[in-house]
Length: 132
Image 1 (cartoon, rainbow, N blue to C red):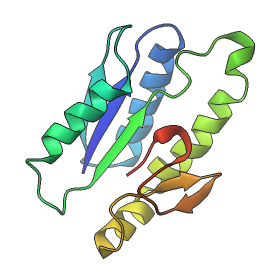
Image 2: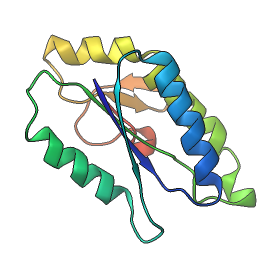
Image 3: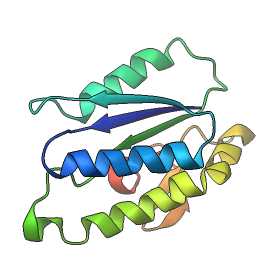
């Protein structure tokens, strides 16, 4: 298993990224953790592109977690609810990761995530843009 962690390291992003990293490493034993700390003028596309390029060299049985420090750019009242939202997403996808890995290994789905707090299988959209 590999984790691509997009980290915007400014303001709130530092604390969010650190908390997420700890949660990942504490819950998913043996995961290959690959952080991508970006500059202010870079966005998620830089980490997604890195993941895409690496995936071209991987076998079909490799399982990847894509996560980013959701809410890093929010401030003050704009941040209300963001920490709670990311906790829901992370608790489902990281704390219960075996469920998602098992689903992917069944071979019926190529991606897995959550939508409105409910496990969801799709190739289009996941809450918070965080997915397996």
